[in-house]
Length: 148
Image 1: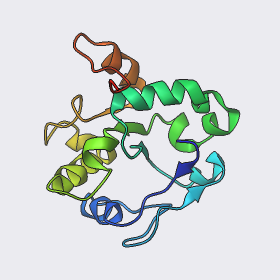
Image 2: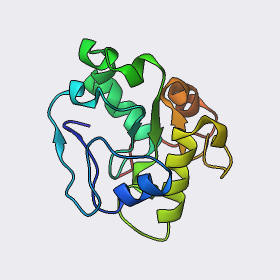
Image 3: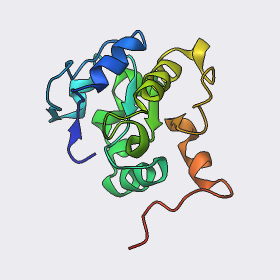
Image 4: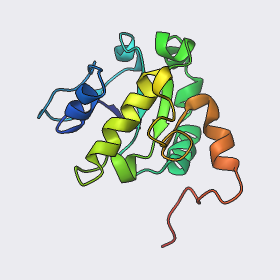
C-alpha cells in the first residue's frame, strides 16, 4: 500500500476473465508503482489486494498509512461512488496457484454487483471498503498480524 501498485503478470488475465480491464497493469507485465492516488481517476472499481496481506492486515495498514483520509483519495470517482473493494491478497492475489480461478471470481463479484456472492467469495475473501470494519471486527476475525 505504500507505495500503491498496479498489477500485472497473471492478475491482468483474471481481470479480463471477469469482464473487466485494468487501468494500471498489463497481461504478463510488471506491477507498476502508482505514484499518486489521482492516477486511479479513470478506474470504475479500485480493488485493494496487497500481496501477502489478509483483509485484516490490509485494514491495519490502511489505518496506519492514513491513505483513506487524504483529499486526493477521497476525490477519486470510484471512492465517491463506493466502488472500492478489499480482497485477501495473501491467498488470492499474491502468486498464481490453484486459486487463480477464485481470484477471477472475486474480481467478477466485486466488479459486477449482479454477481455479488454468486461464487461465495463476498464476505469471506473480499468485502467492499464500507464493509471492512464490520468484517474485521466480527467474532472470530483473524489477527491483523501473524505471530512470530
